[in-house]
Image (cartoon, rainbow, N blue to C red):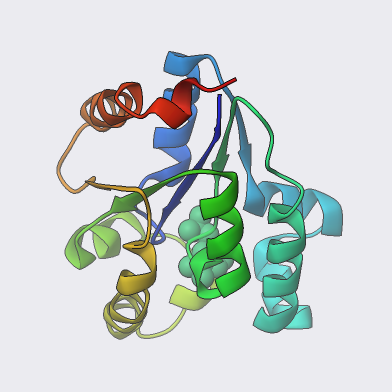
Amino acid sequence: METLFIIGFMGAGKTTVGRELGQRLSMNVVDTDEMIEKACKKSISSIFKEEGEAAFRQYEQRVLQTLAWPSTIVTTGGGIIITEANRKFMKNNGIVIFLHSDPQVVLERTAEDTTRPLLNEDRERQVTLLLNQRLPLYLEADYTVNTSFKSVDTIVDEITGFLTRDSRFWVK
Ligand code: S3P
């Protein structure tokens, strides 16, 4: 089976959906942010604070390049698609699934969150700005699922539905 890359904005449900999808399809699940934190031995917030976003993006790219594993779901940080090489890598090495959420839903889901450095100030403006900037890049994915107001089960049903019709998914 191909690698599945789950992309989408912060708060779109990538981690939750990725885990559930992994259970349903008996696939391993790895998360780029978790791998970066393990490798750097510090939190994403600390990396942003101490080394800056550019350094984080380099770690992100380096980690992604190691993850074209068969039968694996890779859940990614929301900004992974900013880097063109990352978009190419995912396209060339697997099936890319974009989880889309309405800005209002993103704001609600991230309301109490202090772990996302890019949403620390003026959240509403940041979400609108970043989502607008990134949307065309997310839409380069193979499949898009809107996750706003849907249960995890429904989202996973939708994803398994189109995967079973995708011949790449069945290639060993
Ligand atoms: C980021 C999203 C975060 C994390 C970092 C940057 C972004 O991941 O990678 O804070 O640029 O959108 P989540 O999408 O899992 O929150």
